[in-house]
Length: 69
Image 1 (cartoon, one colour):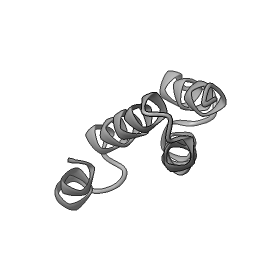
Image 2 (cartoon, rainbow, N blue to C red; image 1 turned 135 degrees about the vertical axis):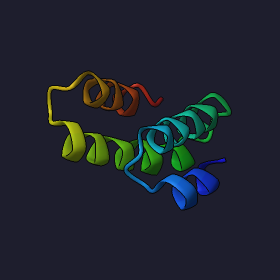
Image 3 (cartoon, rainbow, N blue to C red; image 1 turned 90 degrees about the horizontal axis):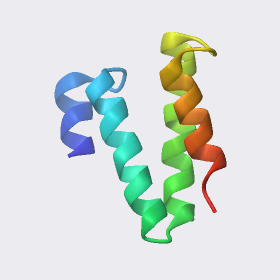
């Protein structure tokens, strides 16, 4: 799903960002932090670049990255 959204919508589209975050969350829930962290980091970098450091999506991305066990 993420690959398709990146291909069809582009990596900066909000739906792509949501799909990437969902995949990272799935990895986190499955105990695969090493696969989740790069996705969360990319989402944080992208949301910060697109929306700014204080936007709610950026804050959520930052929280998600810090919450990985």
